[in-house]
Image 1: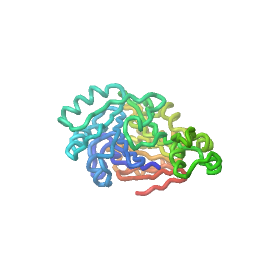
Image 2: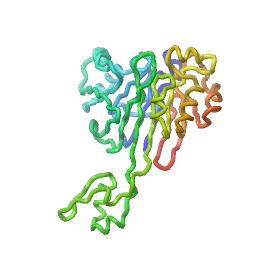
Image 3: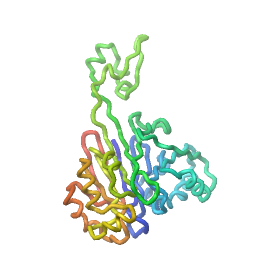
Image 4: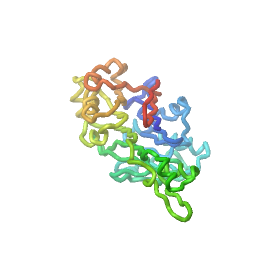
Length: 313
């Protein structure tokens, strides 16, 4: 199960009711914060989401509208008594940027760790307890005016448990759950591995967060078959296409065309320019290419389950 909440859907300039770029992914009570624009703390409080459950902050790039909320958030975590380490990842240049952020936030009672994500993905439980062993975070190279990357979160799913195989191996029911969770167990001096009682792996869940980007093949590839694609749509109609290309952004139609080619289940548009006071009015431009498109707004939340998804506003 994955929960995703948009905390800020604006670009460059915050507006009343539209904070700057931020989104929170939660899984088994632990969280990843994607970007941290102005207004992130207020949005977390409004949505009743705890900053102390954030284990990872994944920055897409180092423009102010994606990180100016970070010094204050770190300071608040310290004031709330956080002691557990906080891991940050981002494209090239993170160490230099973090030194400036740390100077602004002041001394912290917890450790800040930097993580360079490998292309094949990083198992989150290796850096913070509480994450499922099959939870991976992968970087996606994107195309913006500066070094940038999006992210793909994947939650794998084990094969179906076979009680008959477990009974044939003499396994008491008290040992079934560890095997279902991918752990080996010992029975009367012998080891039983999960694959001995589980069927082939089943389809898991995947979620992609684009950050700022022009349409690009790496993002399309990473989003293939995703349960949710959160894609920037800074600019609206075709008359703004040249502007989008100049600044390394996407239009509504471009984001929807990418979603259609990638075969995602649903698309959320976000990161709207202040020149789009009512982005909802432009939604047909995207739905023409990909009907399962939603115009994001601050507070939009979805719960993705292995069997079904449920969305609420």
